[in-house]
Image 1 (cartoon, rainbow, N blue to C red):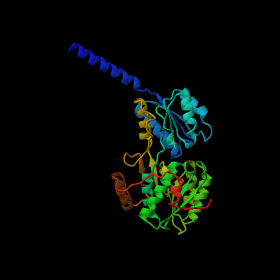
Image 2: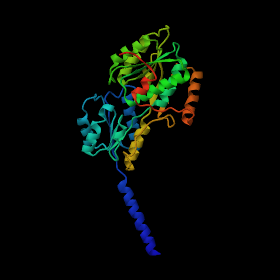
Image 3: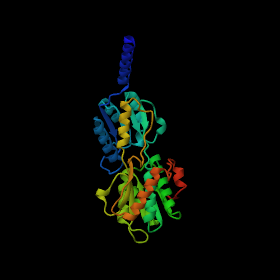
Image 4: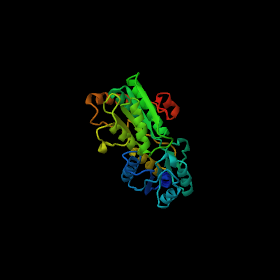
Length: 341
């Protein structure tokens, strides 16, 4: 009897030791962004979410912003040398350099727009898609358009933008099958091209769009400026639907809504997976159900219209409406009328 007890105690001690050995310690994380963390969008949402997730987990957060889209290998190495236990490379342009330096410095990295790069203990992707929120945005835009024409302006065609563009068009056509959805690309990677954003948005407004769904980081400020300074072809106001962040603080009366992303649950899950020695065994996403995606209600949306949007949201969460992410540009092109470049 005593022998069995001792054996059980030894086994429990062994299991406890093994469990402790497998639990990874993480004291700090780092996030790198191409543009300033004050853009009310991709860069700011990423940095704010990293800080919130870090605070909740009790780990320090190192921030390197406004790095541009060039070679960030020196900064990646610096962050690793500073002790980061996870490096979040918050730009699709970093998804080659980050895994390379992560392997060199033996630090796990998080990347976007390269889900097949997942590697246990080393690399995970968070090609977040707000397509469920974009579908609702399309329904909202179709309900509120006076001209019967909507516009989509994008700063490139990365997977995240494609999935939202497709879902927006699908939502608009589900609301009003005959609605016209026009589509224009500023450039292949024109994320910070505000002047290009303004020019292309003005062209879509001239083509009849009175609501613009814009995806573009820094270029979105040019889109917003175009909406603020131009009238629709019917003489009415033009509205803007943004993505990722909330520009309410700088709204001059034209911000209709935004597909807001909350990346804190994503980064919190990454930290938890590192601690549990599970990092790199899965990729990460966002959705309506857990609140990591939501559609912004501005003062420009009537209460009765918003009630209809809320009902649609419940149907998506319940699975009554299926919104499938389409990450390729061809799927978008089949749903829209492209503006010649």
